Length: 226
Ligand SMILES: O=C(CO)[C@H](O)[C@H](O)COP(=O)(O)O
Image (cartoon, rainbow, N blue to C red; front, side):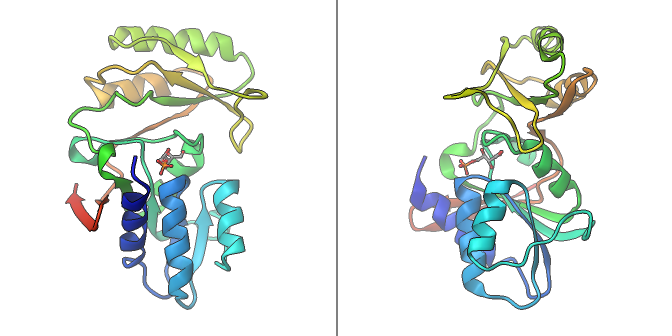
């Protein structure tokens, strides 16, 4: 993990934003650099939809104009971080527990740019534990079903994410299960199988959504196209 690379990616991605755009703001330390760089550009008539309360607080503090998907259902561009970037820009996201709002915002966007430090680029997804957002009601039952799906994909068990004060809650009040790391041989099938479990709200596989990756380097950035 390199903060300078994250910063370079965030600042480079801010150059893709034009005046008057409706922009989705991602969540995480890399996305925070983008939010900062975007605010510094001071472009007129921007409207931004944040993907988490954390990002909303930061954007507000920096003077960006915020809106919601309810008021602005289509966005021109979303820029967000990722935990892993695999072949064809298939992603694992959700390390910051914002995956549901992130996916809603990504899917509402005409174009999505993923930004990351170079260590996030991998040949095969799965070394980062896949986050799965689950409704709290009956979550142990849902968790058992999730684990049956993961076992069928040759993966280890998922466990509920804990913080100092107990189970992590997302902005929507849900829980996060993190799959044990392992090779994700068939991301498309795994995504469908997880989505079929009642109680699973969303998973962190972002497939076919990223149009471009901006990867920070120590002295600039590189781009990868989908
Ligand atoms: O998906 C995310 C939050 O849910 C983040 O974008 C992801 O965890 C990357 O975070 P960072 O930029 O801090 O490494």
